[in-house]
Length: 416
Image (cartoon, rainbow, N blue to C red):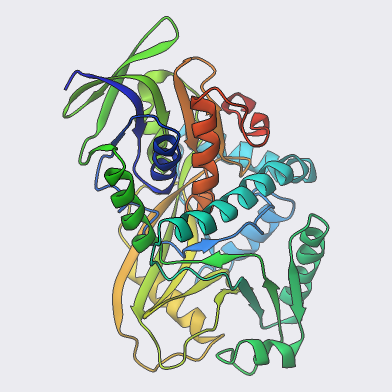
């Protein structure tokens, strides 16, 4: 296995596959390693939302207060935390709390906006050019609210985002029911992010991995990275359970597992896993007209052709990917508070996946400060799918020695 590779990508999720796609299109030779099946990891069971509107990072003012408040209502809280004395985890939590301020939001807006817009444009182009049939719809997503406090907070956030060019419509009670007939009568208003889109992520990732293979990528599944050898500031060998790989350039896109994969490299990569859940069912009699977010409950509802998916929860610090049946049921119960559902759901799949969360809520994209031939592309939190094609393009630009489409300096690893 010790042949020389051009670009070696560790991780075959939305980010790794997008990097492979844009590198192959630019004429590079690409090899992808994944510890499991390519395209079948945490990206496949998520909400499938493409959200250039998400320009506010996870670490923002008020988040800590909200999290503490949610903890007092554990049965409905969209947020959970592992209790642990692991020094890395405690250090991450402290950094996160410190980053929940206005300055962090201001730092993050421009890069998140640039990356989100580039990604949304690339999705539209890629899906059209490659003729991917993956239930892709550019209908935006609609936040539904049941109480004045939630609706007011949503409007406040919407005004902030509008100032940064995000297209938004605010609906009163009668308009929201006209736009979304499945909303229950006690939904009092809605906020429609009209520039967003959604698709079936598992189908999209399957099609993308097939396309990447067809245009020349070598793919190694069930191939775990066990370590690295470095010399003179370069990675000389990537060791795996299937032998050693040598490569000109290495891209680390292993999502929540990045810090574990990179142990040998002595890099400080402050990423914690945050588990989320979804349940997917056969289409209901009455389907939502667009993707929804249930405002106060923070649950995503995604109509995916002949399927319907609910996605929710953010549990920080937990590496387990077993869906907790209690939470699957709670997510269903919460959805029933907002929209009309069939009495008995025909559930096809329940899922839990891990999102890689950085303490400041921004991804890590850029060259390693210590290894000249290593590029990191990780830490996208819940937006790995949404920001995949944009990340893929800028990583390809970096590998090819071009100036990236926008400044990546706020996303460098050495900001921590």
